[in-house]
Length: 267
Image (cartoon, rainbow, N blue to C red):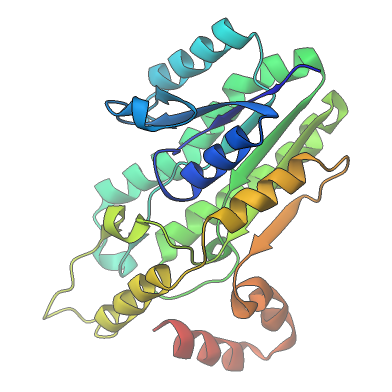
């Protein structure tokens, strides 16, 4: 049986690295991981290639390179992304644009790039790594949550569009995991004269949540199990009780009580 070819974006660290390593060492897959910088590619067990998800030409080159070598891409895992925090009023518009280019437009362009090959083979899996933040609104994450919510609904609609071609589209929404996202995300500066006095405290909680988060290998194992399923679910959540069940609480609790609970936990 031919090995499946997997493309994992954002594979130089964190969740992407865990997924790429885990699938590579299972020896069932030929894994291509992407990174903006591949100077240290010899340090990785899988194939590491250049990719800037905000650059259309870079995306086209990446996909073309893999198809030239392997003639197919069976599985796309859209993991590359960046974080952003701050009061909406104070986040620079340029940073908002950059965020949506990376977290929404980039994954869309990658999907568009692999679909012709998947449709031709009448087989494929697209996994979009979203976030519980796309399902549970929390203060000072409006832009990040908006991007992840967009990717969630795009995944759902795309799944209906391509199911007849034998292609599964799945979203995985992680909670807090031990990654370096807090170092790489854009933080709107904490201003002494800002009207949003609770932002500084909320930002500390966000960073603490990442440092105390779960091992990213938990997501890698979930991805591996999903790929073995004949009929996988459309959505999966990975995280703490409140992260996984926040939507249920939102439905059953009165709105003001739910908001007080969220504010107590996240601000």
